[in-house]
Length: 200
Ligand code: GLN
Image (cartoon, rainbow, N blue to C red; front, top):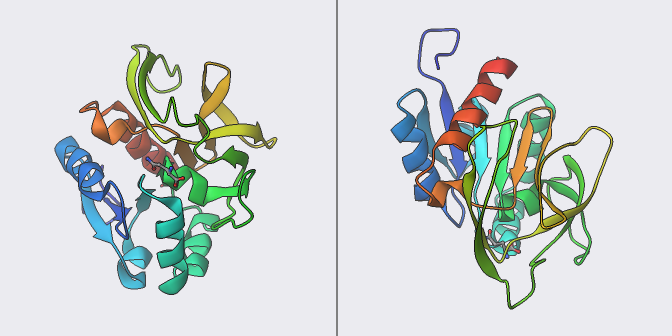
């Protein structure tokens, strides 16, 4: 994909903690966008879209606050920058965390439960079709994953697995409880690039 000035569009990966290199590798494999690590405000102002990776939401959230990135990030998202949160990223985007008082970016109208699958199912794999993204099933990797318990009126549910909401889209905001960047399957990253094309 190319932005208006003929240059390849840039997708940032928030690089404070978590599965950063995996997302960058997926983006660069697509060969249609440039993936860059975003740790500070100057690159955040320049990217065309942003991925907030999985990891530990408390750690990433703490660093977002320490580096004064909450307000600039909220501003860019409210201004229409496409953003995709995977796992911890979904928690960071949510405006409600049912088992924790602190929230972070408050831009996605969902109530999310952290570590929702409990100790036995802390991590598991599954397969499912996410119709809006592709007709063929996806391999789904869940690692101490959250799920969504409630969604607001603007939120489209993309996947409900075992009765729990695990992928949603709210206009230019995408959130998945699972980790496409760990599966070698690039269809979700391609879907996100299409969201960027539509937003442009
Ligand atoms: N359990 C983590 C959290 O609550 C999320 C795990 C992940 O991103 N894989 O932040």
